[in-house]
Length: 119
Image 1: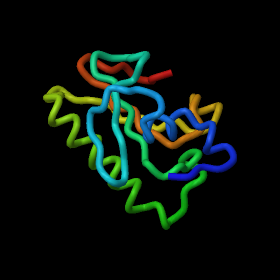
Image 2: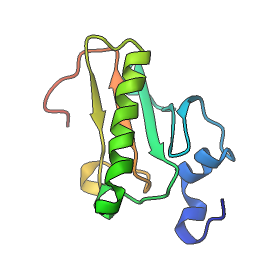
Image 3: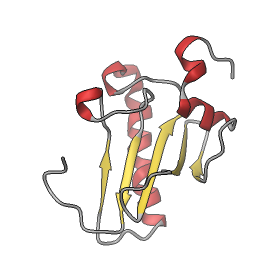
């Protein structure tokens, strides 16, 4: 895949293409899931689209199928990881939302009791 501009320096694009190592959990033609290097729960997996999208705010109706796929994959991974007591799926958007990497991604967190409000 050829990258230009900000995409060339995107951390998650580099992880998806394999130039930065990661612990793969799941992958298909549309997304890549890997273990978070700074886990906030016993299970903390990031699910990213292979297509570079800066954030949820940058999506359109054309991305609806991809967004649904990401959520479906989060549920599949949760089942595979036997998160039978529950889990949390989070998509931070923008600086006030806690997004630190400008590439849309879901956090799958589980393996412990989650509190509310989260932050």
